[in-house]
Image (cartoon, rainbow, N blue to C red):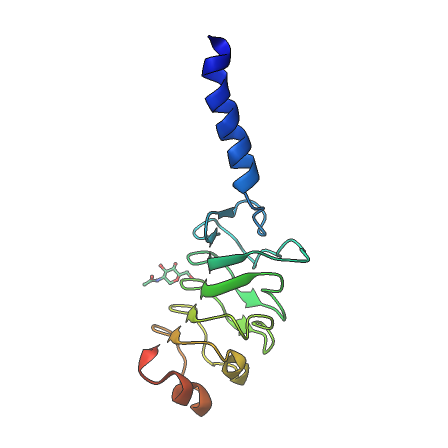
Length: 155
Ligand SMILES: *[C@@H]1O[C@H](CO)[C@@H](O)[C@H](O)[C@H]1NC(C)=O
């Protein structure tokens, strides 16, 4: 009788174990089809675990944290098509911050991030289809970014 009850449990446990892919971001982040680091008092972009074949996630959510500085290669090791950095007091964005995401990033949310400039390097995100820069002190955007994004630009 006991084995009848235990078998489905064991099956579930093993099944769960097998399908779980490791979350590239450390706690307090959690993963499902996306990497969730939003509203967790995070003060810097969590370094991705190094992997020879990183899994692709839908998005990396870092919105609503206290991130001020986004250094060079901050997203190295993440494979994502959407990046949400909205509602962070970002004042410094390295020209090579998004290095590694050039071919994959489709959407970038920088709403309410205190940025007063946009680095030209944003133009290296050749797959980018949506850029949200609402509610920032940004004065101007590089012409090539404007041209590439056209109507999908939110500002
Ligand atoms: C803007 O972001 C800050 C955190 O940097 C947050 O405290 C504030 O509530 C946000 N403002 C809006 C309108 O969401």
